[in-house]
Amino acid sequence: MHTRYGPPEVVRIREVARPAVGDQDVLVRVHATTVNRTDCAYRAARPFFMRLLTGIARPRRTIMGTEFAGEVEAVGCGVTSFSLGDRVFGYNEGAFGAHAEYLSVPEDGSIATMPADMTFEQAAPGTEGAHYALAAIRHAGIRAGQDGLVYGATGGIGSAAVQLLKSLDVTVTAVCATESLALVKDLGADRVVDYTAGDFAEDEQTYDAVFDAVGKSTFGRCRRLLKPGGVYLSSELGPWAQNPVLALITPLLGGRKVKFAFPRDDQAVVRHLRALIESGDFTPLIDRRYALDRIVEAYRYVETGQKIGNVVITVAHAD
Ligand SMILES: NC(=O)c1ccc[n+]([C@@H]2O[C@H](COP(=O)([O-])OP(=O)(O)OC[C@H]3O[C@@H](n4cnc5c(N)ncnc54)[C@H](OP(=O)(O)O)[C@@H]3O)[C@@H](O)[C@H]2O)c1
Image (cartoon, rainbow, N blue to C red; front, side, top):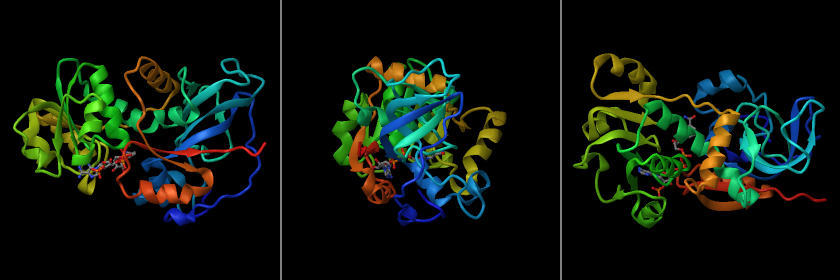
């Protein structure tokens, strides 16, 4: 938990009471969770305006954590869709609390039974990056037969975006570093571009959609990569928060445009991701695993901006 905003070291391990379980709530005994870039942003309150949502001077929610996988330990008296012992996974941005041994989630929240034949560690990283990628892809209306480029294809969002685009029969060019070229091919990319060997924005091909999944480019830089009418997407606001602004202006001008997605994280999204995992279209990519008592180290690593896919936290229970 954290009682103030700041670097990874503000995170402390504490004994706390189990969360209350309301009539419509599901109590999850968490076996695996993740540390992701969303957790880092809330922990540090970066960008600053996030404090409007999470508490101006200090965080209102002290137990962090968004993604979880575990077993249903108890249910409220009004719960009908989950039973004791169900293996579940999901996403709890806003309320958080997934970095604890027990998490109480509304029955109609972003929770679903886990994909069959998966471990908790495999399922926990199934929602954060993927729901951002899914939101962007849906918002852009990318269709089968189109050409897409994913910049930052090894990140949590980028590795999901490559796979989700392939599941839609989009031809995917993925941009990553030299050491990840083979890995990104394995994710399904049709073509890979090494960003360390030259500027990817000088690529000769053009695309229906360019998805900057690492937030390091701009529309201006990528414009020439877009076909007429093509769409630029980014997982970041961009310099001076230009991406949401350009998303309002560029559609009025015709031609190439910016779209900026505000993701939904409801139960339908988690179920959709489960279906993609079960069909083999999406496998959450795992980089490192840490035990819960090493979570500060996990935060430090995630904050390097160099994780490959996802960082999983295993939660051991004493009993
Ligand atoms: N809108 C939101 O609310 C929201 C939520 C979550 C994340 N984000 C933002 O979205 C971005 C991506 O998040 P994420 O979790 O997917 O990131 P991540 O997992 O931390 O991944 C970054 C990946 O990008 C690669 N990379 C770093 N520099 C690169 C470059 N110049 N060109 C190409 N690849 C590069 C890294 O590998 P190499 O270093 O080996 O290349 C790493 O695999 C972050 O900026 C994050 O803050 C936004």
